Length: 166
Image (cartoon, helix red, strand yellow):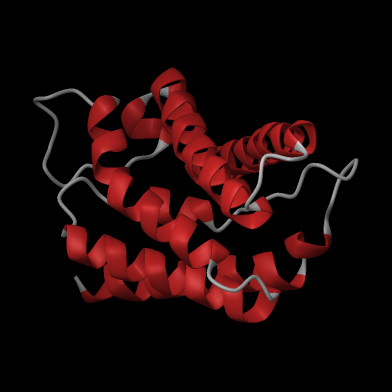
């Protein structure tokens, strides 16, 4: 239990630092920014307490907000994903699987893990960029931001997961 808590804390610190120091400065074609800290919220096990997921999610978003100058955007989006993560995970696992199943490419399989990652990242980005723009005046740029950031983030998460697998 203590090792898992330390591992969670180290993952939290590493992903927040990578996001703030490196990935916030990446903006491909003015529409794709990788939001890798979503991966931290996706890593929670099946039986993890929902209040714990919400607390970690909010703290992750708050940390990103503080260092990225996006007041409340990341915190609200991360909290929403933290609320939905157990339900999204249950959509892609078998009913008779273990109660402490960790969502990895090894446990879910490549296809299910891809769709789990895609759905989590899409929900997060949809809410994130909707709150950030707060209008549908420039809906084409809004759609490009969601699509580009979702694709880039999913690719990064799948690469990290494949490296972790080995």
